[in-house]
Image (cartoon, rainbow over the protein chains, first blue to last red):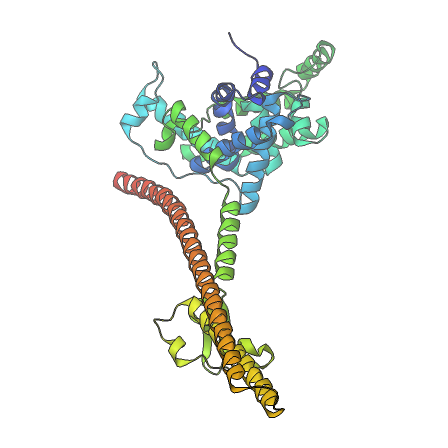
Amino acid sequence: MTWTDEELVARSIRGDADSFNELILRWERPIYALAYRQIGREEDARDVCQETFLRAYRALSGFRGQAKFSSWLYRIALNLCRDWLRRERRAPTVQAPEDVDLTDLAAAREPSESIEDLVARRDLSRTVEQAMALLPEEQRTAIILKEYHGLTFQEIADLVECPLSTVKTRLYQGLSVLRRELARATSASQR
Amino acid sequence: MSYLYDAIDPIERASFDAHLATCEQCRTELSELRNVRVQLGRWTPPGLASAPDAASPTGRLAVFWARLREIPAWAQVAAALLFLGIAAGIANLDVRYGRDGLVVRTGWSNPPNPSSLANPLNSAGAVPPASLAGPESKPWRGDLAVLEERLRADLRASEGAMRAAMSHAGGAGTSAPGVEAEVTRRVRALIDESEHRQQRELALRVADIMRDVNAQRQADLVKIDRSLGFIQTNTGVEVAKQRELLNYLVRVSQRQ
C-alpha cells in the first residue's frame, strides 16, 4: 500500500521512523536537485538536502497541512539555499568538469545514445548550468521550480511569497537572458 | 508565459493563436523560448549517490538518523564552557597580574594562612608557614593547622584564666594546699578531655575533607574522559572528511 505524504507525516509524528524514512527516500532526489541547481556544488547540495530533512523532522509536529508537504520541504530547502548563497556572498558556482572518463561517460549513456551524443549532451548541460548561474536568484528560483519541479505559477507565488504576475515576469526575464546566453555559447562553440 | 507553459484557458489560447498567426515577431520569440526550454531539459545534476558516504539509500538514512542524534555544535560549546567554569570554581582559580607578572594558581596549591584566617581583616601580605608551603603539603593540612593553632590558643587562655582565679583565691586565704591540688587535678582532667574531644573532631573533619576531595577528583576524571571522547569522535569525523577531500583532489589531478 502506498501512503500519501500527509499520511506518512501523520504516522511520523506518532513516532513511526519508517514513515519518515519513506518520506526521505521519496523526496531526497528532488530536494537535492533543487539545492544543486540553486548553489551549484555537489557536496553543499547534499548537506542542504540532509539539513532540509533534519529541520523538517524537528518541526514536523508544527506541520499543520495547510500546504502540501512537498511545498513545505521546498520552502525549507530554498531558505537553506538562500542562507548558503548569502553566507558565501556569491552566485552559484559552476563546478569544474570532474572528469572526461569514458567509462563514467558510458555508464551515464542512454541505450540508444552514441558516445559523441553523450559528450555533446554533457557539454550542453554544462552550458545551461553556466547560463543559469548568471541569473539573479529570484529568476533562477522561478525557472528551477517551474521547469524542473513542475510547480504551478500559483504554487511558486505561494512559495516565494510574491504575486503571481511577478512570478511570470521573473520567468520571462530569466528565459530571455538564457535565450541570449545560450545563443552566444552556441555560436562561440561553432567558431 | 501562460501560453508557453500551457497554463491558459481555451478562450485566451484561441485569442493568442489568432495573434500568432499574424505576428511574425511573437512567433519567433515563442519558438526561441520553447527552444530554451528544450535546452534546459538537458541540465542534469550529478547523482545523489556519487559521494562515498551517500552511496546507498540505506547509508543515507543511517547518516540522517545519526546526525539527528548529534549534539549541536552550540550545545557542545556551551557544555565545554560550563565544564570549564565549574572546574575553575572547584579549583578556586586565582589569576593575578602584579610585579611578578601573570600568576595563575588554584586554591589547592595555595593553602590558607593560619594568621590570615584568625584575622581575616589583616590578610594582606600573609605568608604561609614554611612547614605547610612545601610541595608535599596537602590541601587539608592548612585547615588542620589552623584548627590546631586555635585550640591551643583557647586552651592556653582558659588555663591562664584558671590559674589566675586560683591564685586570687589562694591570696584570700580560703583554700588549703590539698584543695588546690584537687582543683589542679580536675582542671587537668578537663583539659585532657577537651583535647581528646578536639582531636576526634579534627580527625572527623580531616576524613570528611579527604572524602570530598577524592569524590571531586573522581567526578573530574570522568568529565575529562567524556570530553576527550567527544573530541576524539569529532576529530575522527574531520579526518575522514579531509581524507575524502584529499582522495578527490588526487583523483582529479591524476585525470588531468
